[in-house]
Length: 538
View 1 (cartoon, rainbow, N blue to C red):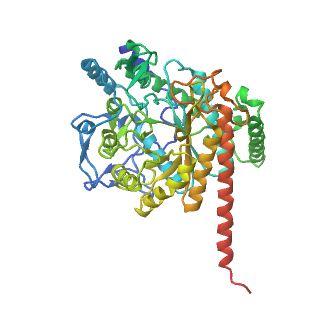
View 2 (cartoon, helix red, strand yellow; view 1 turned 30 degrees about the vertical axis):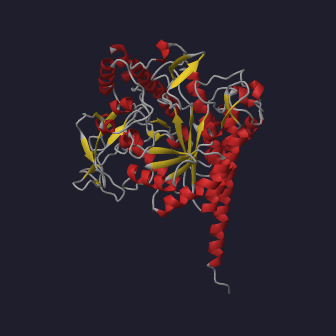
């Protein structure tokens, strides 16, 4: 155990670890007696007063179970108040003493992320809510211990960088890059048990809970897996930080990001053409005497996210910010509540309402508009921009019918959210060979419906949430390289749901970029028209 603790701690000590998001990452404020955030002594606020800068580790102290927070307009909250509610999708551990021992160990471990980083992400997501940024959230359906490999991490990071460049070029807005990485292990299941040849065992719930091999030992929930998941998440984020700030993500390398197997494809050719245009722009800047060695050109901001599902683990990694008094789940920068666990009076919503991380809400066609409004009010009682991201997953046809009502209800209640499309989960089908797959055409159709509805409603399409990988897998059918049903078995590696491969992901990025470009041009034409209307003729 000591060895594991040392490994986990050391993986957080990358020299860039506290500078990934800039010098303002850990500026903190503390609440006054009314619970309103005010600048503390020596602090620098937007109006020019001073702000105190603290060390990252000071802003994340372990939380005692008795710690209680009073939320605005609601009842008190504590890190374990979720236990008083019914929480779905949680495993049953046979050895309670071992479970408690593991959780106590996790409580002593360093935070994987820091409060200031989560606050900075919230500020960025607030821009996406108003159409001034775009969220690109992607990664594995479920990370696994078996496929934990630096090359896999690098390839997924690299394709996200490529997609970010494509989206930024098309939309001319900042792209917020958030990985489904460094903690996306647990998965909800529709059935708690799985039966094969008359043998009934607990369903596989993710590597941080049990194993995927169909035998009694593997399928028994094991608390020690949480320790391994923590270590893998910390090591993954350490590598991501190094990639993000160590020169790999420098814009000057834009032409070198193409993955080998995608290079000689239609999407690879399109990306290479775009990359050369970026290169030419950088050359022009350099010739004009403008520096291209500024940190904004040599590094990138990157955040992590996962579904808040395994509540004992999330509680064990919750820390209190010593300057603001707020609580942060330090297992990831952003968390989301899933379709199966978003009950208004459920344990998962109870836990999430008390942590200050940016929160996502997965929404299907089953969501009632009034329920969504109530859920937003519970999770964001102060109606803070950037706090809530509504991730819509319902299929193209349902999107056109259901989404307008959700948008109108949220807008009618005066609530601020960032609208994001998850075109994956509403389009899962079973292939004749028995494997789950998704059609690229269906995914593209849902994205188009998402943009169409927002254009119709006058609201902002704030981002996209994808299950994808940088690997050359054959799990989703279609795309310009035409993965067929017969191809599925050749490179089907997912432990859970099918993922877009690198080529399909890049192709989808070009589709989204074109919609962002049209939206931008439409907005410019509208502004010009308004200006012309104001002119007085001679």
